Every structure is written in C-alpha cells, then in structure tokens.
Length: 90
Image (cartoon, rainbow, N blue to C red):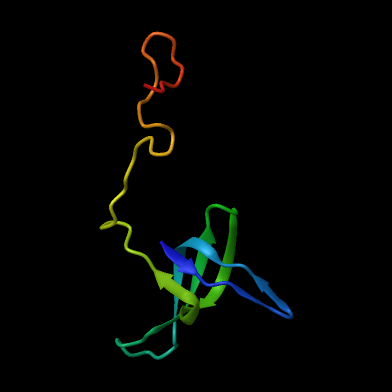
C-alpha cells in the first residue's frame, strides 16, 4: 500500500490518495543496479488507476507491521442485547 500525494495546480487535477502499486518502471539502464523511477497505482476506493506516477509523489506504507484496533469505540462499547438485538447502553 502507498499514499500518493495530491497533485492539483492549474492544468493538473490528480487528487492522489491511498493506493496499491501494480507495476514498477525502471530508469532504463541495463545494469543490475537500475532504480525505480515511476510506478503504476490502483486506487481501490475510487476504482481508478494512474500510470507512471513519479516516486517523488509516493509514501510507501508497511501494513504488515501496523496494529489494527477493532471494536465499538464511539458507539458506547457495550455491544448488542442478546435478547432483542438492539444496541445496549448499560
């Protein structure tokens, strides 16, 4: 996963956002030490894709080591009634 920075100025309207890298484009040198210069990105939320985004606009996220907190925070945190299924407040 990656976060693409917004690129909006006169003549350019590319909002960026959270996406998945689908392809890497290298600098064209034939050596083993060629570097990645551009990537193709798929934005799953907007169902769009963008080709050849420069790596300067990317921030790569490590989602494997991130902690995910699940629960009902903000909803009272007590869950549902076992008898009728409504949200409990006690």
